[in-house]
Length: 69
Image 1 (cartoon, one colour):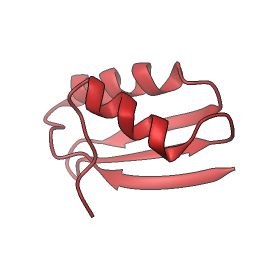
Image 2 (image 1 turned 90 degrees about the vertical axis):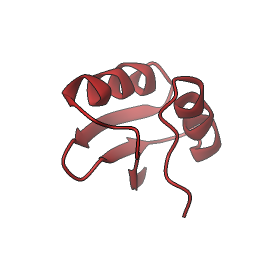
Image 3 (image 1 turned 135 degrees about the vertical axis):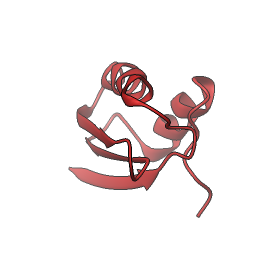
């Protein structure tokens, strides 16, 4: 399993985190998603067939792209 924590600058409230959770949980292979509003971070655990690329693409589609590193 892959675990990743990343910043999403567009997070401004709990509703933002909930929207991200709902969308990412629909991806096959995503095991868990959690978020923290004050730090604007998301923690995700996933296995194949999910990949970081399709997670990023999903986040971009819902206007919550991860911060560029």
